[in-house]
Each structure stands twice: as structure tokens, then as C-alpha cells.
Image (cartoon, one colour):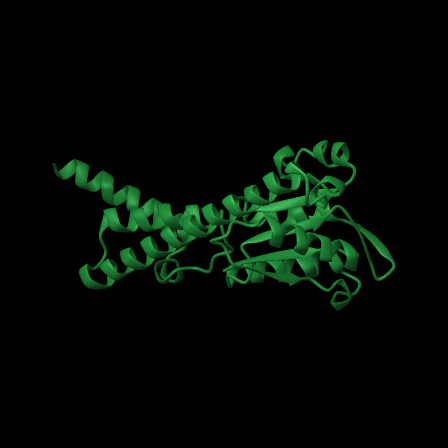
Length: 218
């Protein structure tokens, strides 16, 4: 099941997004949606909404996010690009899409990849090749994300199991650090059991010292 988050203030646009995706999604993919109700967020809409999204990413509640560029919430216009940037800053490789009718404006934002900007009016034309092509792209990116995250999380679980069984091992610790760095690009991460005991930066220094000591003994 692929669960797609949607941020839009227009109910008809939300219906169009859902319809377009359901019509063009791959046959072997089940899909569900999480609609972020902007009325749930008061004065600090962007930081509070961003915090909620990051928590949902962490808990595997969504695997892709579609954001309208201009949103009216509580009589205030906010920029979807601000939400996009907040999420990207924390989890750089989480798949997101900006939906807009002013494509050039979005593409001029240096923090947003041009291929993540979809033209709303074309995306809603379900008979056109544009919508079909871009929906397929959404699912390809979602699948890649889900598989990468699962693989890294499984690697970490396996390696931490080895630490429990074998005790501290330089190579295993190094592998855990490498995998945790990769995972941070995909989801907000808590400290692992190792990091709870030793600060991550200090841990890297210790690993290097162990390596140097081993080299001297050879």
C-alpha cells in the first residue's frame, strides 16, 4: 500500500489529484491518501504542519507528498514551497511534488528540483499523456523510496543484532554509522542504542582511533 499525503486548500483540487492518481496508477499498486486539514493548524501553520509531516514520515504514514504551491489557511496565504523546503532540509531524499499552474515561479526556486514541479492544469487532464507519465513517475519514486528505506532499516537491525551477540566491533560499528547517515536522508531518525551511549561524532572519532591503533599493531 502506497500512502500519499496531500496538502491543498481546495476540495475540488484534492478530488482531482486523487482521481488522476487512481486512474493512472500501476495495476499492481494499492494507494491510499492522507489529506492534511489546514484548519487543524492555527497561527504557526508552516512549522506545525511541517512537524506533523515529519512525524508521519518517521512513522511510515506517508511515502510521498504532493503540495499545492499557494495555499490559503485561516485567511492567510502560505507558500507550499516553504513546506517543501522544511521537509527537504530534514529528509533530503523523501519524494515530494509541487503542484502549480505557475511552473516557472516554482522552478526559479533554487531549493526545488525542476522535475519535482508538476503543472496542475495538465496533471488534471486524465486523458492526456502528461498526467499518465507523471503519475507513473510518482509511483516509481515512491517504490524506490520505500525499498531503500526498508533495506537500510533492515541492515541496521541486523548489524545491531551482531553487536549484541559479538560485542563492539570496529567494522560493524562503522557499517552502522554509514547506514544511519543514509537513513537520515530518508526519515527523521532517533538515536540508535549505540548513539544513546556515545555521541555520533565522538563515535566516529573512536572508530578512527581503533583503526589507527590496529594499523600500528600490524
